[in-house]
Image 1 (tube, one colour):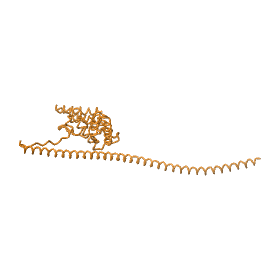
Image 2: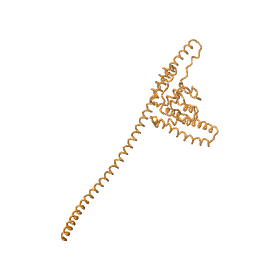
Image 3: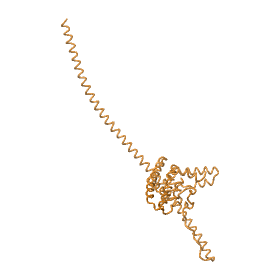
Image 4: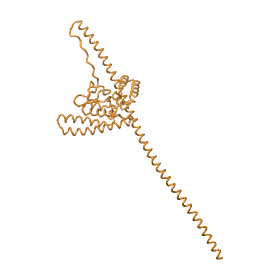
Length: 309
C-alpha cells in the first residue's frame, strides 16, 4: 500500500470516522513493518465536509470531474481566441455540469449518513468551479485526496497549500501544496568579527522568531480547522434535526387526516345506526299490526266455517 492509496481509502470515509480509521490503519502498517508509511498515514489531516464530498465525487463520478477539466481547457482556448460564441456555449455547459455534480455530491453525502449543510454545498460548488478555472485545481479535485475547499478565479493561481493529502497529484508541483513560510534573515553588511557575530546572532534570533511564528500560525490553522469541522458537524446535526422535525410534522398531519376521516366515518355510522333503529321500530309496529290483522282474519274465517256447519 502506498500513502496515496491509504489517503484515497481514508478520505471517502465520513469526516467523523476519519481519525479513528486513520490511527487504526497507521497502527496496522506499523505492525506490518512499514514504520515510515505508518508515520505518514498518521500525519494525514481530516478533510472538511465539502472536501470529503468532492473526494466522494472523485471515486463515484471521475468522468464528471474529467468533463470539468475539459471545460476548463475549452474556456482557456476560447478566451485566448476571443471566441465569444464558444464562451457563451461553454458557460451554459458549465452551469449544467456543475449543477449535476453538486446534486450528486449532496446525494452521496446523504447516502453516507452525513447530509451536507448549505455552507458545505456552497464550498463544493466553489471547489468545482475552481477545477474549471485552474488546471492544477482540477488535478487536486480529481485526486480524491482533497482536504479543504479551494477557490480560483482563472487569473491568479489557485491556492493549493495544504489542500491535498499525500504526494502531489500529476500536474501539480509539490511546492504548490506546501504552506508559504517567512523568508530567512540575512547577516551584517561588514566583513569584520563584530559584523559576523552580529549576523550570526541576527540569524539565530530570526530563526527563533520564524519558528515561533510558524508554530503560532500552525496552531492557529489547526484551531481554525477544528472549529470548522465542529461547525460542519453542528450544521449537519441541525440539518438532520430539521429533517426529522419535517418528517414528524408530515407524520402528524397524516395522523390528523386519518383521525378526521375516522371521525367522519364514525359520525356517518352513528347516523346510519340511528336510521336503522328507527326503521326497526317502525317494522316492529307494522309486524304487530299485521299479526293482529292476521289473528282477526283467522277468527273471522273460523266463525264463518262454523256457521256453515
